[in-house]
Length: 466
Image (cartoon, rainbow, N blue to C red; front, side, top):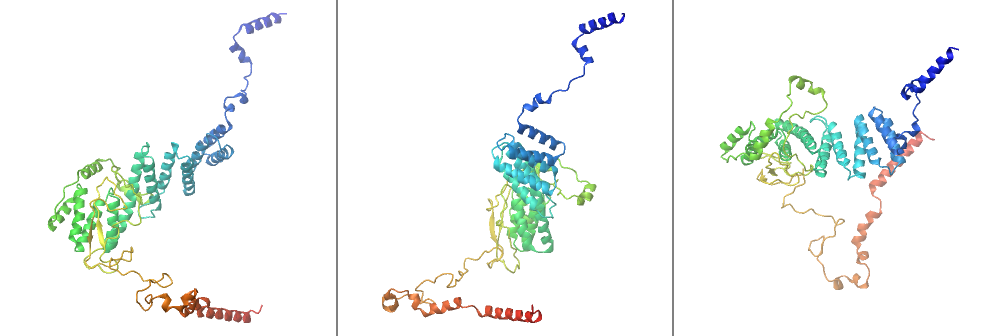
């Protein structure tokens, strides 16, 4: 009997309690996922979000498979462009030679299909960076460096107002520093060996195409020394003058002035733009190269670009296979094919890119030897060289020159009766029929080869009767 009032009191307390306290005695229900807001989104968006989440957590292959499913299943989806770019980014992030190649192909496909989207500039920058990251040291194969130079130049030409332009310019300076360093090492090898022709040709191309190179003053000094030893002090003075004018803060400027003074040539005034450029380069912060860095640098596969320029306009013209002045010859007893060629002495101001297809402003051409001769290396021939003779099969000779092979023309009505009957005169010409006979009959050499092969077969049949 006493339990009944107690139960009634508990019921009254529960009824008067708040809803929050009543939930304590009830198990919390699980939310119904079928009514969530995320389930009401489009299926292509769900697929894209899932793929990006997989890529974020390192599941590159799973994410790319989902993105490819999105592209194939929903060709009109608004996430199509993002999916293509995400696939290329996934390959780029994963790294490796094969994956980087797939990434470059994906970025280029994106540029082709979506050239007007803002992400096209990013895709072009990624293509250039893919080659930049694979760039080896200067003394190795420079294919990746060449490709990186072309891609950075393409980016700067197509997207000049993009926020990534300063980064692309600096990377282009670093790539051109590596290319110039590789060319300088080959030229220095020939310079020490004593091959003036090979060294001068590479140094001239180097100083004209890459004026921002950190050793351009040394290359000009080597060119001046080559021509001075070849007894062409006039051309050597032009290179010494370039050091004084374009690299006034170089340590070789004083020696170059001394060479000009001893030769009796005028000493030019330093270019104000070159002075400002070299001052900015000397004051630019650079990483200090310690002894440990020099010692362990041989274990790194990438090039060292800490000496690359940080200011100035990089070379924007693509490299051509027929650059003027790349084959400069030496005088002073120079013999062999190519003696007597002329060399182009180009004047390029650092910080201003020089055109690579034509000689820059201020370029002068000087003959190295007195006796001109043809050069078989690049196909140049003197103006007095007679034209090449042609065979009768290649071209018909002109009528009426009076030579035995080509008699002068006469009146057809009086001298050639075969032409009056309307027939082809070539059929009545015994020389024409005689010349046509060898073409129809097989040569003797072929018949002899056939006899030899048949005799060999008979000998084999004797040894192996089956």
